[in-house]
Image 1 (cartoon, rainbow, N blue to C red):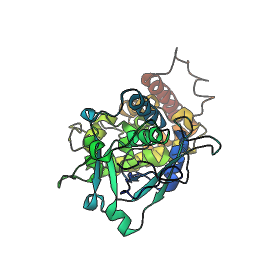
Image 2: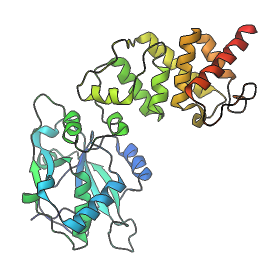
Image 3: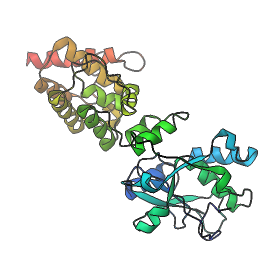
Length: 336
């Protein structure tokens, strides 16, 4: 039997497990802070670069289920890849230790650290989960509490990467019983097979903006692009709207509109809104303004004057209300 945790409490000579991470160590630490997982020092397991972020809530749920019902192989073993299937992926050791050193490791007192694995001999021996990373952490905590015994032979299944699939695609596919959300897919590095959409996805990630807002800016004069369509493209299902024709021109227009919003008097909280972008698309369709006129309209806007000269709609503004206000600004600009 192999202990799942390594560090102060459990030191063994068994082969280490490795997780995949989808971001650099610095980016990963920032993400962990948002999920209340912080960095630490003791080695537990490993992750690869294109897998999902570790989410505290998921670890807690796994801990509760395993604590109450035990590990149930019939519900699915921890699936891992090893050897050549890890080639080309950055590999990181994962540590799970107490957040506060004056208290023992527990589900309410743990934190996570990553350390890149660069030693080739260590990489050759590595195993990394494509499914089950949250359960691994939960089991490690339970084991440290003396409530669980980890048995690799009955709890882990080594799986082979299909020849026609990349590791990110295989990871996404094998987790289809627990669907990845948009953020998971956006950070996975999977390509949609469309250069313009891949570019839009990078913009969303780089600027941390809402997908529906960015999709609107980069599809002016085109049918609506939706997150579920992008997700399907990333797993090889071609469901692009028939009339959606993205090009360097639509990309350039999107860039100009985005920069105009970021340079405007409005806060990001105000303009980072899918309904606003949808209203801008409707206005573009109705009035056919030039890009220069659209930039001028955006420059004239701010949250204080948005409804100063035009009636404020009841409740939250809908796309049609935004479209009407863009049209009002447009007429004002034309009259000057």
